[in-house]
Image (cartoon, rainbow, N blue to C red; front, side, top):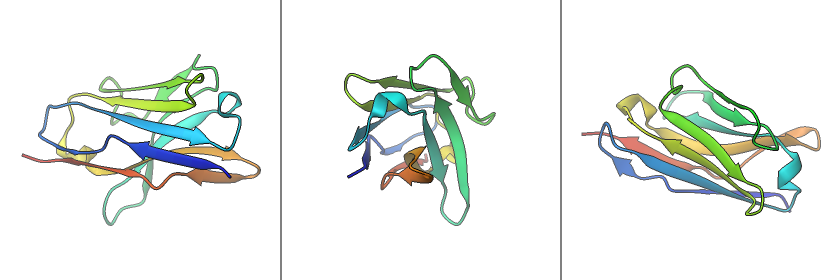
Amino acid sequence: EVQLVESGGAMVQPGESLKLSCVASGFAFSIYDMSWVRQAPGKGSEWVSGIKNDGGRTEYAGSVKGRFTISRDNAKNTLYLQMNSLKPEDTSLYYCATDMYGRGWRGQGTPVTVSS
């Protein structure tokens, strides 16, 4: 069974940092590209960042570039998102995601709230 379990979300103040984790199981994590997406209350999903299966290439949405860093540890089947200089507009439910077997997969999400 494919499972993606996110953690690390919290309520923080603007300017602070958080590191999200996503533990994958039930599939060969190391051969799949992975992404982080987010969905704010009442809004559609927004792609945040992606990383190639071997970690050799990363990409970011313009809204987070320079503040967020995606990484992965294939030995631990874990995806990370380091988020620095958080802003109120980063408030969202954050999901890790991938595409396999002809469909998209995501976890249950971890909430991030940035507020003073």
